[in-house]
Length: 376
Image (cartoon, one colour):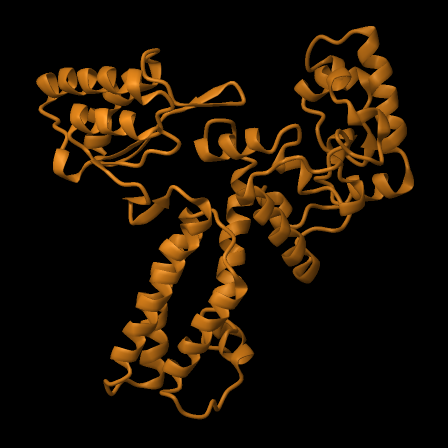
């Protein structure tokens, strides 16, 4: 914590510098990621930005004693001509890689398609090799389950939570089959897998279901989309890439109510597909949820162009359950008490409430939130 506080002046200088440019997406700049003393910079104009960066680091080093370890510093040029790469290499002394660099244990590749091979495929082979090694030891059945929970699961769960790429179900099924064989010591299974996966409180042993852990990690990211802007920054980035829609609203729409998806962000699209699959199976929310938005909703045609409803949206009317108070339709006087509104806003209010009073919307809007909905 003390180190993070000591590093914050440097990070603040990096973010405020106009000479060091990062990714510009949705009107925001994404330049620096930091965890302890590990810094990751995403620079879009390295020829002009890197000299200013090095100067800033030298100035900060003179004051604080913080120094960059050149031998451990790596750069991954993407779309930069070779002459410029050679020039940057001489200028910085950094090691330049054309394929990948490692940050916090995750390999970031220049080719997005290689991300799974560089991370999941390598880790799965390592986990299988570890289980083959442990299999030679005389460990009890319960001890083998404990080793899976305490050693294997945290390692793959880390990738589930940090690497936003779609994982092939076949890869997880392959690893799960090796976990089963390890637990049973390559002998005949005496208890069904579904029983082992159950929590102890309902008669199981809590053996990890890797696919369900993967789904749970993606749903946790979906919950994060509902956090205030800026916390965390990756959620802001994916939200901008999801434009003109927002994932915290779009996900709650039934499939037939959704406008055409224009996003090409594979991370958010993957989370959307998992949400649809898991919600259909476990019913975390009803098809018409109280969290459903009325803007960008094909069942409310005027709301497909959200701009005229901006005032109502700014005053907190975003989802259908916001249109009811104590089971009764929200009155315009209640909205007026929240902030200034004009005559045009009253007309928009009438449009929205006409939609809100339809039987199916009223039923959904006045229903109690599920545990998952309340978490969002």
